[in-house]
Amino acid sequence: MTDRNDQNKGIFGRAGSNKNASGPIIPVSPSQALKPESAPPPPRRSRRARNQVVVFLNFILSLVIFIALIAIGLFWYGKTEFEGPGPLDRTTDYMVREGAGLNEIAAGLERQGIIANHRIFSLGAKGILGDDTLKAGEYEIKAHSSMRGIVELMQSGKSILHSFTVPEGQTVEQVFERLRNAEMLEGDLPEEMPEEGALLPETYKFSRGTTRAEIIEQMTRAQSRALEQVWAMRAPDLPLESPEELVILASIVEKETAKADERPRVAGVFINRLNKGIRLQSDPTIIYGLFGGAGKPSDRPIYKSDIEKPTAYNTYVIDGLPPTPIANPGREAMEAVANPSRTKDLYFVADGTGGHAFAETLADHNSNVARWRRLMSEQEKALAAEKAAAAEAAADQAGETEPKPDAN
Image 1 (tube, one colour):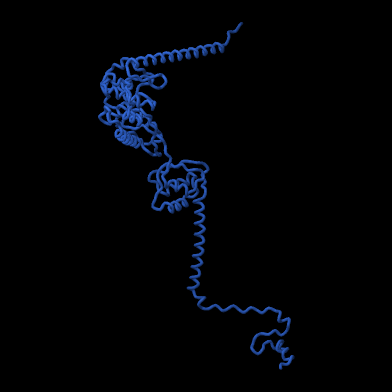
Image 2 (tube, helix red, strand yellow):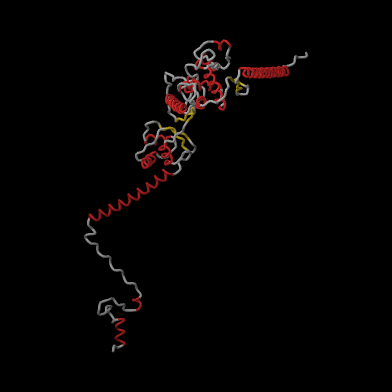
């Protein structure tokens, strides 16, 4: 049995000794037991850890991580700038010329304050476009458009489209004058005009930079397509031998009436006359024979001598159709000739309201003419009375404002 004193000695040890038999440090007193033990010294670095290759690899790894962090930051910044709202404060137009490169477009956009950084625009555009390109044209760029939005707009080619409208019934010469005055179009007109009736009157859409010659080509192709379709759908018993004759008659119908619902009936009158061998007797053919494509001056009436004057186009003098169209007819006029109204009408005259009165017999026609003349006479009298009243009122007003003579 172990003596209690021996146990105490085993716990606290003898004076001057702090190790037991196995070697661990044993506190010699209660106060010393409460003190923290000192940390063991750090292990000594191996020679391998101090090797220069390892140090270099550690440096490279740190450098790669640092560069990656910078690249991620730059990418995020560029992406935010590329996709965020732009500096443009109001909607504007921007023109991309034919053959312009990406850097030129980007620099121009930055110059005009549409984008903030042309380098970011170029880099972002290359990422989106791939093998595609930005299309030439005039673009409407909305206020605060992002660079991405601008790239996608120019990639799509959805540029601003302008309109050029040719009214039905204009001659080639009049169309050329209209083209000459169209400021959005470029280039000179062809020296040689197309044949009368070769252009289809319509509204044509074009982008800035389109030439006048290109519009004429569009109109010519459109007329060829329309005439081919209309001719294929014509009535089988028409007294017309070719598509060209259809255009000639359609041009006369176009000049005779501006009302769409009257065109088939007017065409029917002329078809009936051709079938019966009656001269067409159309006033617009007289005018074209006298003045050509320039047209009659607005203040110049048709005289009786004009009706009797022989020209190649005067259908009061010649039989059948004139040699060429007298204007460019629209598609509806050509369709009216291809499928005219089935009536027995041989005559028509203006009714004074913008339309026409039709008749099967000369007697009925003469009655319609007499009615129209009475209406014109009444309108002229009413207009003269208005002018007289206006002149009288002006005279009265002048008399009231005239200064009175001095009584002295």
